[in-house]
Length: 461
Image 1: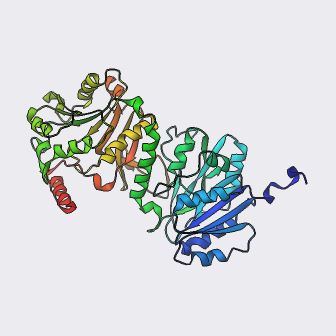
Image 2: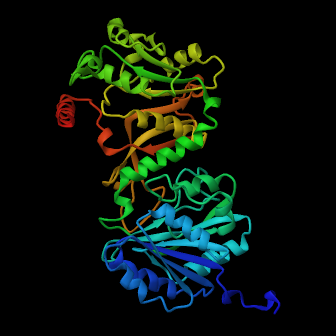
Image 3: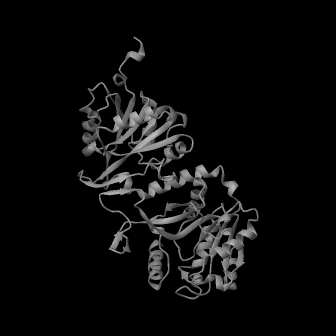
């Protein structure tokens, strides 16, 4: 028989795979949502990845369906299961459904047709409904159209429920298995610049948030994303040298005179900050910029040729004065060609890690932005005043887009291209953010915050 005469829905054009690790209580809803699809040309791969609950009992209910294949793995983790699914896939397209989520019955119909109509597109994803453990609606999460309103591709789609071309995923080598988490960022990084990616503004799946899913393992996700950015940026990092670390100091205008010298445990705030910066091999120079030479004995306690002192004018240290003047003078002395990056790291943030300082660099290079900024998401309502009273700035209700999230600068670390300073700007036109781990976010700007820092430091030891 001529293959062109066969109904396209009579063989699997789409490989759907469902992964469950102890998601037995949700799994039936996930599987049934695939069976209800209006698009019929699918196969379903069911994976029990080392579950100790009733996952396999649920899966066995569906083993007799010829469209379904069953696999049992020994708790190898999501990236390894994803690669196994990719190797087993018979379809032209592949999509993952986590064992605790639910497809809308139209998701394959819509996404398959999108890729069919856009042959240059390698991956397409949709909006979704966020639901709680019991399935009650929390919000409609909407991503603006990439081709129209989102010009910076720094935010990946949800790791599940994105339809991709099998040939492209195999071409790029599948998923990285050396990461502890897989939220879609790895795949996004390796596809976004070499292939077309797109999205449709229809909520086509339910993403369940509960106490045991990956969303709550924020530290694993942050660590994985850092590793991906680091590996991606490493190949081009030398184009951005010299890399300068600047620690601004001042004698006055903090809640204590010479706040940099305040002891936290056995070390001053300045000592702690210098240690964290020098621990990074990325820096060509670490520069303490101060209006008082009282910092010099602290610097002399370190035996690293990269550590330098830069004299500031006291007039540059007042609270309302921009740091750009100081940064511009430093950049002109240490980066004549203007190719480099400066990272501002602040001594009142004593718990920031070297990894976070380096992430400021990797985030900027990874996105080729003008600057990158460590931030904390504000999850409480924030308002501004209008002529009709208060208006919420951040949308926290049933419908929100990627532009409704509001962030606070964490005052942890900011990286910027040195050419920004020469135009009088610290950030430049394109600023990319990265989330800072909660335990690093304390910024000491009051006696109360200092007391909290002392308690936290004592608790850590």
